[in-house]
Length: 78
Image 1 (cartoon, rainbow, N blue to C red):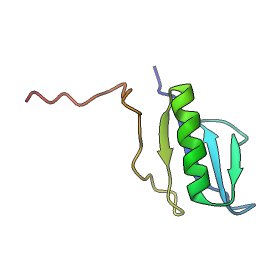
Image 2: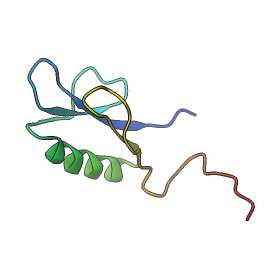
Image 3: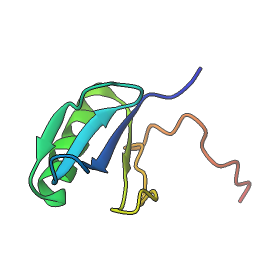
Image 4: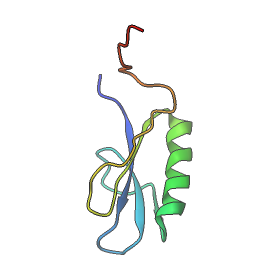
């Protein structure tokens, strides 16, 4: 079963940042600053139980967060 995700991505057309659900055509919200988008996206992700994946301006992923609900936790045997 694929995990559900919320992404914070830069908006190249309008400037600013968008919060988008994976595979969505439209954003869930548009924000002027990344800080505002991160705050809103994290809250949406927590409420809907999705993985939160922020991106940098160049598109690379920056510290994803599963809010303690990782569907594939590490198998450390310590």
